[in-house]
Each structure stands twice: as C-alpha cells, then as structure tokens.
Amino acid sequence: MTKLKITAGPFVFDAKLETEAAPKTCAKFLERLPFESKAVHVRWSGEGVWMPLGDYQFGVDYENHTSYPAPGQIILYPGGISETEILLAYGGVHFASKVGQLAGNHFITITSNLDDVVKLGKMTLWEGAQDIRFELG
Image 1: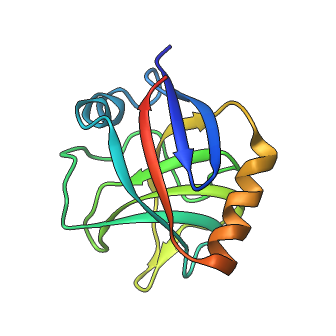
Image 2: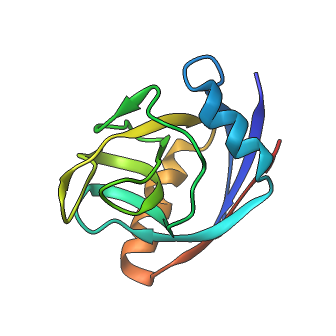
C-alpha cells in the first residue's frame, strides 16, 4: 500500500493510493508527486472541493469510476466533455459539471482526521481557495 500525506489549508491528512482498484491512475499521479494546487469549493457537485486542471492530461481512461464519492474519497476526472479535475468529497457529492453528470476515478482515500475533511470543506466554502499538496507519506 502506498501512503500519502495531504496538506490542505491548515489540515494534514494521511491517505492511501487505491493501487489495486485504479492502478493506472495511481501510477500517473505518483509520477507527478509532489502535486500542488488550489482547492476551491465545487459549483455543481454538492459537498466537495476540487482542483481544476483545465486541459492538463494524466493520460488515463476510466477505472474504478464513480459519480458518488464518499466523504474522504478523492477522484480524478480524466477530461473529455469537461475539464480535467481532482475532487475531494467532504459530504454528499453527486459529481457533475455544467454539462451534466460526470464520473471520476476513485484513486485516493483519506485514512486520518476525517472530521477535518468537513472543516476543510466548510473553510473553503466560506473563506475561499486553500493551498493543497500531495506527497509521499
């Protein structure tokens, strides 16, 4: 199991890569570590924060994909009809964009401090974008 450390705003989380369920997505993400971005609150999907990546491509197709990630699950939308993005659910999520429902590859699960995931989501909603960094744990 590959462990990650995620620092988002003032919060730190342990996480694991879902290498058995999403091996190609995990391998491509590992190549890009450390990965830094901004987490902004979702617009259409419910209780989540996302990292918009525009035309950035990870070069993966769908694997272990879902439209309903659970709190603490992180998905990668590989691009296509909407822009590439990473989404972290902190509550109820129905993953979508302005073009409608989407599905993303569940490739990371947060394994510690799940109460802080909710705090991160609410902080992002009310205070704005937060720095986020993924690195090997």
